[in-house]
Image (tube, rainbow, N blue to C red; front, top):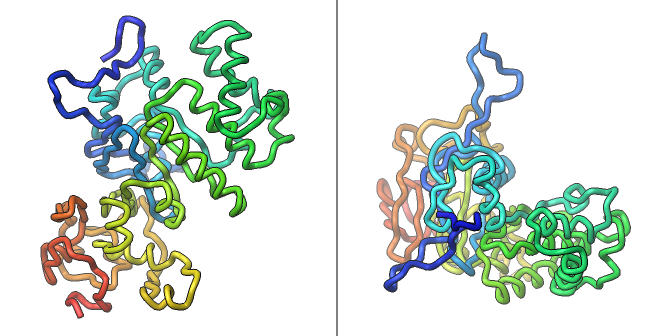
Length: 361
């Protein structure tokens, strides 16, 4: 609900009731009409997000991983209400915001903020960086000029920048410095949820480490929930409490980050993890490289049944006929794969150790 002041009610439930997740999606769907389609012809539908359930709790980081084209960024934009969902629901602090529009979205914007992949394209090149960081504060009437300027200086100090950076233009800052400023802008309204879409992929390795460490420190200090989107699983492991693996518009596995990395339950997860570079020959020998055949299918024509079946080394007849339901494992993770209910009936055990057939070795 919203308060009389027009802000989202973040009050925890009374009587010791379990707090709702900061954000939760239920059966979330986002379909796009492909460019070039017309009413005179059958429309081509891009199934970017096609039935996603996930949640992020206060102070928690959920890492969302998958190949390009899996629907990660589309999911983020729908969750943030930057685009409308086709079906399903989005709950923010227990309140359904799926169809919220217009002025009613203003309190939602205060609660959810985003840091984009390319810091240079997310800033106005004609405005100083400090002016861009101050813009959300002015829009929300967070005080006079002096108060807002003081808040901007405070935010710059929090993210490891000096006050002099506020007077510079985006072209005068490095990529790492500008991404820190983007984080400061996102934090200016004290959000409960921060969505980061590939926030370090455009930075060099040393700068990546600095920004990742900054994010970890900021979350410990401010306890915001975080949805961290990346294709780099080594980075995701550093920042995440849980991980969700996405493939062709669906989440195929979720679980505690250490459990997923040590004992992946879905063949796609195992393949992604095997691609992480290992620094020593001994570590490289511990897990064979799993090379997936072919490219990810088009979201306009996803395979029938299990969407991963066209690239899965353990494919069975049922995989082309039935979309696998989510299986809840004893360790709290979930996996959508017929290997856990049919054929080998792994029942939540890891797929590691299987070798190119539908029977464990």
